[in-house]
Image (cartoon, rainbow, N blue to C red):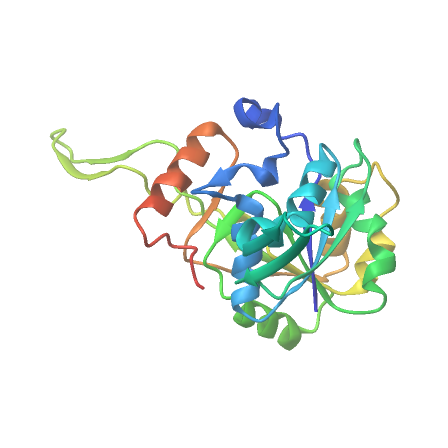
Length: 258
């Protein structure tokens, strides 16, 4: 099954990093967030990726073209006229990666539409190139198969932006919660499972997946939520990036399921 990753946006809210590189190449630890996302899927046995490129997409191509060289031990024999090159040791993921130019200004729905020729008539998964989670991909896929609808979206409850105080009648604080789990509302957390019929709901490059496509699918009673109660965090700002980086440095980040 193919995994589609949206990696073409400008990442303007993370301009401290994205002036020089595309957002999916912003590093958590020493590896791009895109690598972390792919490792999540790969840990469940999904290794066939389609990456939708846009802003600074050539840098993502260069990253994967040089990936084996950068991860392996190599011997370069400069004394040989042919300057032989030999990879001695490599611990490389078994990934097949199709990098698709989906346009600089194309919206999210349009990017999905552009990779239709690579999907053919198969169920596929879709996610964003800037969010991490410990969602169980196999359970998500099984849930999708059981309900038999066109689309499944992983629904999450993000942590609250501000702390929460439980205050008694005499103004004594009964409970202090630094970052509560949202306000009870569920939001789109990405990590979709989609049937190819979804392409019929995408009109073109200007189509936004979240506001143009999904409402139409929902209107046909074909969109189902998979509720994820575990870890989920997008990388929308430099503060988000730093939080994820600090979690990685603990040695046991919650999205590291491999």
